[in-house]
Length: 328
Image (cartoon, rainbow, N blue to C red):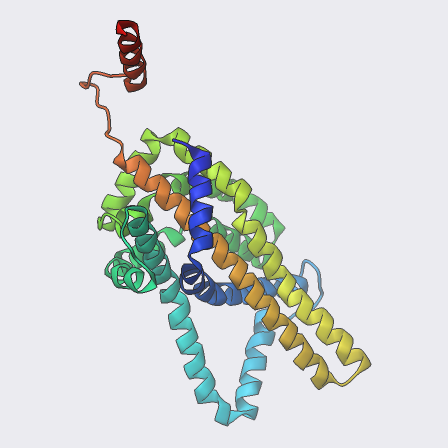
């Protein structure tokens, strides 16, 4: 397998398909990045107000609940529209990123195989594999690396460092298990979307494909970590957005009117959110493309069993060319 060619072809494909970036990268990333910003902001203030860094008796969650209840009491007319907006946002957040990934993989795979498949075709075929892919994502999310980090932060913040140290061996085992499962199930999405396999069948086939082609999978994973570094990009941008909002709003509120600070901070935060979502969208489509191309190439190779007679095609070709040259 030519790793450099796969990376180069994937980047070229990503640059030539801006519509895929917008629809299957940028738009779903708007929702995931927004939730990520809110989540990390909550974790930051929750730790800051916990017993580890503060003597405050009330938790940050209590303050958030109190603020929401007070806001509802003071703005009753806004309650129903805000609830509807929150429900719609939640539905799109939970469903659309998975649909976008299925659609992107369909479009990328079909274009790789010579079919002209744009955004519309990607959506049509992506819908067919949406439900099993969504089921798989719900299943695997329990063992995801960030889910374990959430559990660790909860234990540390609410049960204390003593209990946290007691559970540390369990967390380490879970993290190792999570990394192993993530590697083994690398191709599960693609078996579901491209081959139309069921969830557990896809997981089984993915594990087998990884074991058979462990070297290729591992090297591609390393290359993607070096080139993409999606987690680092997201972490930096996720922390940057609330930091910009807080700093700019606080500064302007201190030297001018509080309302002006809120408006400027909101504009800057929104622009930062758009930039972060677009960059994450590019990385997402590039990542999908690399793994789709890799999956198609690995699954196109015939698996050699113990009964098959090995033939070195390259050596045979060289020998044939040499005999032909010698006869001349």
